[in-house]
Length: 244
Image 1 (tube, rainbow, N blue to C red):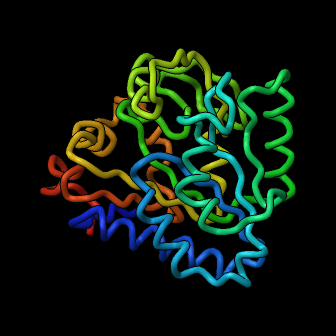
Image 2: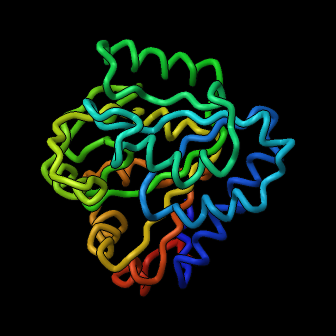
C-alpha cells in the first residue's frame, strides 16, 4: 500500500485515467468496478478521451452500489451518475454493464446475481472513493466486513450527505453494495480522496488505528494505493509513513 499525495484534483484525474487505461490495455478480460460521484468525474472524462475503442469492446463494468428504492434512471441514482459521467461517453452495449437494480422486488436475488457475475468475471480494476464517515461503497462504519453483496442500513451521515445528489429531499434508508472483500479481491484497487472537507477523515484513516473504519480495511495491501490530493492530506503530509 502506498499513499500517493498529489497537488491537485487535475493530477488525480490524470492518474485515474492512466490506471483505467492500463487495465483496459493489459488485462485479457477487463472488469471495472467504479465509484460514482464528483471525485472521479474528471478522471472518467479523461479516460474516455484516451481509451482504445477496439479494446473497449472487451470491457465489462460491474456495479459497486445503489440506493434501495431509487430507480436507476432517476437523478441521484448511482447508475445515473455513472451513466452521465462515463457510460454515455463510451458507447457501451447494455450487456457490458451489470448494475444493481435498486427497485427490484427481490433484493436478495440482486445480490446473488451480481455475486455470480463477479465469480464468473473477476474484477480487474476497482476505483473507490471514501465517504465523509470513512465508508467504502456503502459499507458503513460499525458494520461487520462483508464478504459478498448485501443490503445495508445507511448511516445518518450517508443519508445526509447523499441529499446533494438529488434535486429534492429524498428518503434513503437502505443501500445495496458489494462487500469489502469483493473489492479487496480485485486485481488492482485505487482509492481517491480529494478536498479539504475530507481532511479529517483522511487523518482518522491513516493516524487512528482504533477508528475501525471501512476504508482502513483496504490498508496494507500491495495492490491497493491511495491517491490523496494536498487539501485532503493537509493533516498527514508531515510524518505520515509510506507517502510520496
